[in-house]
Length: 242
Image 1 (spheres, one colour):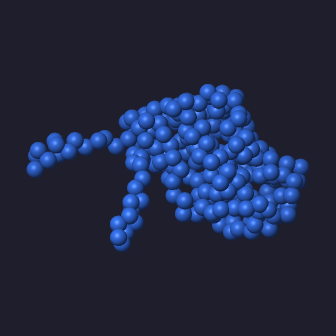
Image 2 (spheres, rainbow, N blue to C red; image 1 turned 60 degrees about the vertical axis):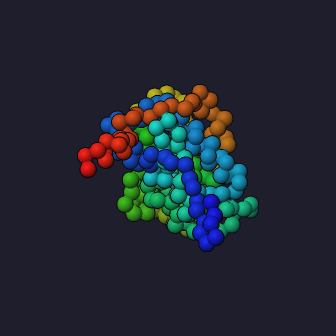
Image 3 (spheres, rainbow, N blue to C red; image 1 turned 90 degrees about the vertical axis):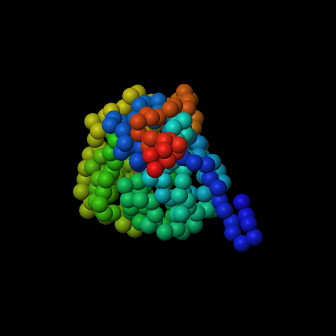
């Protein structure tokens, strides 16, 4: 909408962000709601990536939800277009807890895998109702990841030792069974999240590939818990006592 001297952008209304929704619920999200949300988010990501756009700041605060079960990507302040061959970018993007390991290791060349990793962390948060890797600094963030996924070496992630901030003196942790941390509903659900949390970005599934997985085939729009949303204000009753 444009007037003679102003331009107005009008967006659809969504009730709250995913972070607030999670804070307002007592239990982790139901399996079918997680599946529905992930289908919508992966579709949105596939669309962005097909148009050569990286979001670069996916986190629950930047995902908006409504009472019908829709979830939308928001806040494109750190987004940028990318090209092939990949160019050099800053690695200081993505909120810490959702930052891909290649960024934490100082990668200046990266691609769509950074967004996929972020969604893997977000899915885990839906299932746990807390962050999977809640680091308080870059090195602590790396160690939080290593303690769960194992310290990566060349046998797991070819080329990892070439990253600027990789250190051969990193503590060596073995990977743990994610089922000890996350209560998965099905094996497909566990496999799906592991596709996104693959160390090697060249082997991490793309959004387009994730859309073809069995986990998303049965996804359907699922209504969220209504008690987590702000109550509507009855305008007539609010004025009647004035």
